[in-house]
Structures are given as structure tokens and as C-alpha cells.
Length: 252
Image (tube, rainbow, N blue to C red; front, side, top):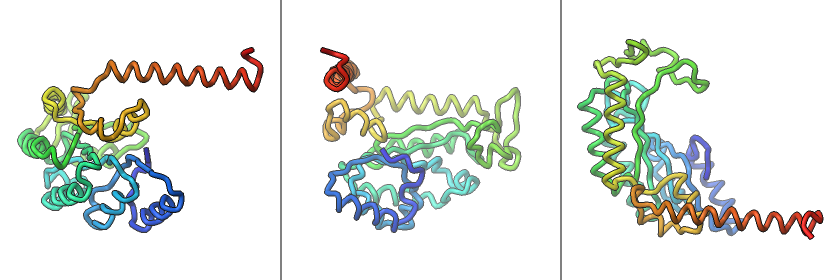
């Protein structure tokens, strides 16, 4: 699990990592954060990431509303965003799972625009295997304060009873409800697949990528996972006690 915020910051970096992995002979499989705009700018990265062993990626897409994207400094050419997602999936196929992260309540957002682009996300399961939509939070107490956190008024936000209202009249309460509705629908109707860090972590319980690729989140065998985890803990405890007993005389 590679936690670098921008793993694909440059093609040169990816080439060096790829060459290093090749030298070791390791069959590396990993999940990472990617910048979609950099994939669009440097499409050669798509095949490079595939060849070095990427099995899952997290994309901070945030929005598919051109006006909102422009307001927060993202690409407002949404057709290019969608085309890049399609192009990447053509290269990665079923061997890589893609997770998209979105924000509800950005500047210029309305209930209509959110529902329109979320419907596109919902409909394109062959491009985005899974996703999440979170309501925008605005707080100056955040150590990682965004530009909106630092100056909400500049982005058209006012406040009433502690909740924000954006420049289109969308309230934070309504945005929260919209996000909850989309996520509940996506969960209960089997739209969300195993992706991102979960895809890599669950394999530690003895499941293969191919096995997990078949599951949606609502159909995961949680009882099996719990039992597998318990057995893994027991095996670890036994190995640890055996080691301590052999090396330190703790156990006769």
C-alpha cells in the first residue's frame, strides 16, 4: 500500500521505481493514490503503472461539475476527465480496480448538478469500480486546511447556525442528505466493489485478487473474514510464543 499522496507526480519517478522492481525480481502488487490530471497529461504512465504491478488506485476526482471543478482549480474539461478514465480502464482492464473520491457541496454545486454527475458515476461501473461521496466540511481547525477552509467567503460560502450555505443556495444539511442517499443506494444495490486499500489488505487473510474481484461490498463474507482473522492471530501468537520459548527460555 503506497501512501504517497501523488505517486505519479512524474513519469521519470515511475520509470526509476519500475526499473528497481525489475532488478529485484519481485512480483510486486500494490495500491496507490494517483492524480487523474497527470494521467491525462502523461498517458504513458498508464501502461507503466500496470507493468510495475498496480492492482488498485485511489483517484481524488472530487467533482464532474465543470463550474465546481474550475472554482477549486481542477480540470473543468470534464469530457477529458471521463476520456482519461476510459483510456486507463482500456489498458488496465479487469486487472486493476479503480476507486473515485467525490465531494458534495463544492462552490457552484446545486442539487441538480450533483445528481446529474453522480448518475454518470453510478452508470459507469465498468470505469469506476467503486466510489465514495463525502459532504464538504469547512473548518479552520484542520491542520491540513484547504483554501476553502482558510477563506470560505472567497468561495461564496456563508454560515447559518454553524452550517454552510454555498453560492447557489445549497445548504450543508441538504448536501449531507444527498451524499447519504447516494451512498446508501450504492451499497444496498451492489454498486460498490472491493477496491483501494481494502483490496490489498483483505488478501492478507488468504483471499486472492481474483476472488475479491468478484465481490460487491454488500456481499462480502464477513463471517469468513472474521474466522480467517482469528485463525491468523492464533497462528501468530503460537509462532511468537514458540520463538520466545526457544530463544529466551520463557516456555520450557
